[in-house]
Amino acid sequence: MRFTVTMLGLVGCNDTYAPPQEAEGMPMVCAAGSDPSIEVGHGELRFEAFDNGPETLVELIHGPQGGFHSTIAVRADQLNIDTAYVIELVGTIDGMPLGGGTPISGFRCNYRAEAQDFTGGLLIWDAVPEDLHMKTATVDAYVIDPSIKTSDGQSTIIAHDTAAFTIWDPALENE
Image (cartoon, rainbow, N blue to C red; front, side):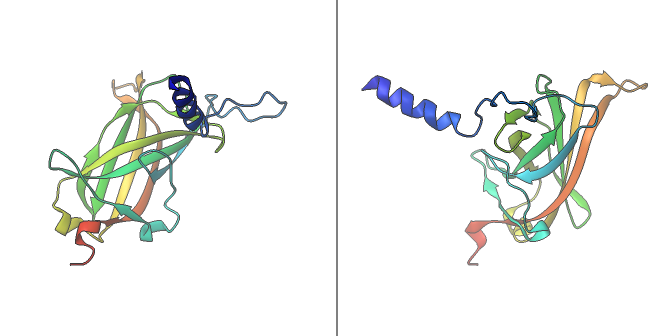
């Protein structure tokens, strides 16, 4: 019985991130390139695009330590998946920076989507839910390579993207 349960768990984990099929012309989505790009979206476990632009509702999460955050994801192309990047997230509302987060992470190959994904980034808000609910937020995502320095010793920004979404707090939905 123990073996069966283990196998079911492994099958569930293998669905999204399956190894590529060896075939001529198959895009190598994990390969680093000379022109990396990113798309900022949302999602804790998988990348979801802001399909409705600023009208896309993204749930405000009430964290266990008393804070509030939106879960941001980044989809990339041509990054080096062996590199630990700084992924700087900056959130603004009405032109004021009210949120941030700076995880250090790598990207995973998502062969099905033919992309590299980072999910579960916390954009932590410095405001209460009543001031955030149903507000349009803008998130800037910067992918920074700490191993590549500029002439003044700063880490290099490899890619950047900006997107807007609406913060939605289900706890305040009916108030």
